[in-house]
Image 1 (cartoon, rainbow, N blue to C red):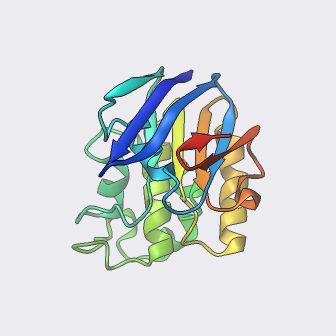
Image 2: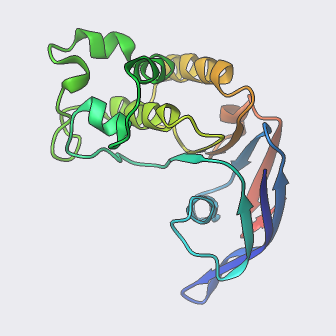
Length: 200
């Protein structure tokens, strides 16, 4: 379960989040839409612990994985980017790879999972980097998955296949997905709009 109580946050004399209250039961899939600057990414940073709550409260029960916007790869191999130093069985790594729609591409690489992604992930495309980050989140076997514009670098067909595969995997998991467009959140049980720091 995730519970947000009276969460308020201001930055540079502007209120970004205003007295947010939200309860998400275990296993529920919710979507949050909103324009750029509406506070969506700020909310994700609070949920993931990147920002410390100063006013209000957040309770999140269960292991959490977060996929945020941008290329979040480390200068390591694909395998190391997925495992992040954890001991993860090979079968579990490949399950994450398949769900993230990376299997065909990785098997075509001479070094496979041990391919170096580049100093800044510049040996892979934006879409591949995004899917490696998704595979990383899946491989950690979380109870809560948070996706912040997690398919923004993917074409529509790849995105559709990915969401379909994710739906089979996350049946009993709690999911929060952030997007600009409501159409990207068709899989959600509920969709909220974040506007001027207020959930509605």
